[in-house]
Length: 421
Image 1: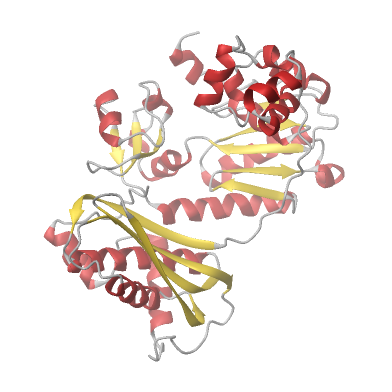
Image 2: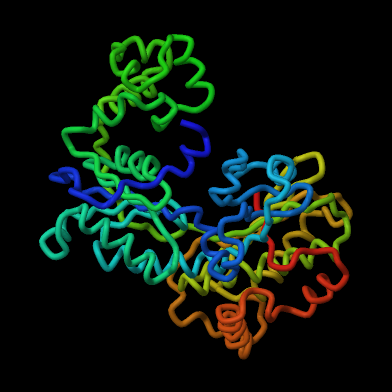
């Protein structure tokens, strides 16, 4: 089968479902999520190679449409290489606020089905639907309903793997992409796994794959026939035992319901190294705005603000400060970040990357009525919430601090892009 056929193989067609008895674990994965969300606003780009990511010399690919993947483009690839592989691709900037809003709606759907939802990222999660079977039907029926509702409510597609374990469910969703549904019967896990390449196993990276190849092990089935003691001798006790168990479809891990974010942050790698403090502060402002928006969107506030400063020689330092009160205000985050930057003594040092992060999170509730910086916050929270509402309706960049408007007019920044590393 050609690479193109593999990438565009259709998901399993409707028909008699496989036996889903005992298969209460679902892995739901949005198809080319960032690209799919962008195409909701740019439907004229459907069917064309589209890449989402940082467009600068140091930009990386955050997501690629299946048309772009045919050319070998994939996430985390340097954008310069992606453009060489697919020069006709349309490159769009990252818009995390947009993706977060769609993701929040999708996860709300998941939690209406079962409280046992384990997010892996914005666009994928495990669900344990054992408790929903009596109310909503068999696992395969629940999976089919999820796909239909995601399409109807969000206008995007997802692929769902149904199995008795998390590991097999995740592999199943990968095998039926895009826009597919695959049930692996509890008694058929070994038959499903053994033809797959060893790289399919969790824990097999490039170096481990090479080590297994030296042993003549290229498929999961071949690995499964090797005594566990041999694998442990070659790969170490923990990894050898782990791969042996997975090769026989054994994965005892439960779906763990979502735990609150421990921190929220954003960072930017400059296209060229920067030693101008004014440019650095404007970038800290942009990042603080983004972090504040994400805090408020999640109903969180945090007490510790930190900055990450990476120099041209790749040496990286971080500085942090714990505030007297938790905050979700970009203004507080920005002022603190600037003070940390200035205190680091790097105002004339060339920087490659800067980042802002807020930690020690908790529910925002009624946020404190006074800034930690001894300034009355009256009006700031209302202003930032108003900006959130405008951004939700018209997109990020419709309203922003004057400093960032000047930055865009001067041509030294990105309008709405991300380029995070």
